[in-house]
Amino acid sequence: MNRLAPVDPNHLSDAQREVYERIANGPRKGVRGPLAIWLHRPELAECAQALGRYCRYDTCLDPRLSELAILMMGRHWLAEYEWAAHKPFALEAGLAPHIIDAIRDDQQPDFANADEALVYRFIRELHDKRGISDALYQEFVGQLGEEAAVDLVGIAGYYTLISMTIKVFDVPPPAGATPELPTQLI
Image (tube, rainbow, N blue to C red):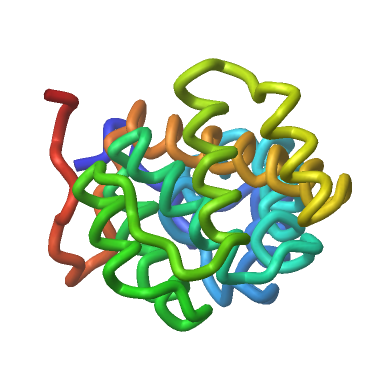
């Protein structure tokens, strides 16, 4: 149950209506989850949804890699809404089911693709060490490029905001989703 109910679409201020329409009529095709919570502060909703649109649809990363990073963010934060919302996108983008299962179970996946292993290592090290070693940075940039490094950090930052919103305001998973993540760290 949400700690803060989503704003009622039938009772929006002019500022809320403008942002609501931009989100609903964009590639997301609806205002759900954290986006609905952010509408309490339309200025935040506008800025965050624009960043999110870029991070979700317009980075230089292959969707398979960005969805891998997004799932890792959802798992790190135990943000069930994010996990449930993006697991189908990850599968559609070509991320192997065994990789998704390993991330869910907090296990090291077996990667067939070097770029997936590199994104995984980058996000894990960023979480575990609160930074990236020079060696990993050079390897990442050497294989995927500087622009990919910038975009990956942007994705990690945006989906941290998403996950924090989900956790603080108890945003439930999408309707019909079966919870897969632990409810708390062990």
